Amino acid sequence: DAGVIQSPRHEVTEMGQEVTLRCKPISGHDYLFWYRQTMMRGLELLIYFNNNVPIDDSGMPEDRFSAKMPNASFSTLKIQPSEPRDSAVYFCASSLRGLDPQHFMNTEAFFGQGTRLTVV
Amino acid sequence: GQNIDQPTEMTATEGAIVQINCTYQTSGFNGLFWYQQHAGEAPTFLSYNVLDGLEEKGRFSSFLSRSKGYSYLLLKELQMKDSASYLCAVRGNTDKLIFGTGTRLQVFP
Image (cartoon, chains in turn cyan, orange):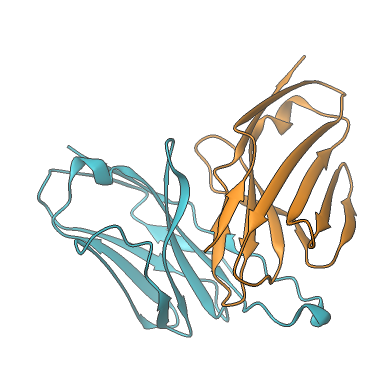
């Protein structure tokens, strides 16, 4: 497997424009996570999905942010309209589910290379 | 809620040993993870603890105490390439995966 694939790698856009970030998780993974990373706040969880269903979107900062997962192999994070404070690196990660600890199953998340978003 | 604390920065000398601590408060517990992140790159997985005790992986070891909500990452025989940020992450009972803000480690010759 090629790993988690994100596109684009870099995005520069003007304030007010719509931005769409894309993610292809590792085949067979049940969970998909969207994170935003900045120097000030570190790696913040925005939203995560289990079997394509959003489980917790409490980290989404505002209604300007939305995420979808129409099928097991694709997810999007959309910002509309974008603002300069949205500038950050956005990571997508996928993993298998976290099972009962007695199974000792290793359920680490694998990250994509990220999208560096700059809103001017 | 969930909260993860770790020191912001640490420095050490090549060849030395360094311990990076992490304390956490979570809703349920489904494992604690350590990740390494070099500047400009994605986080990469280092270790996983779900039971109390020490897990050793070459030069890196990770310890967990669930009753204390405490973990540490131990790096031995430090090399210059170990200069990076080290992120502590906890998976809660709904499989929510939360990261600490990371500890930036600088290794000097």
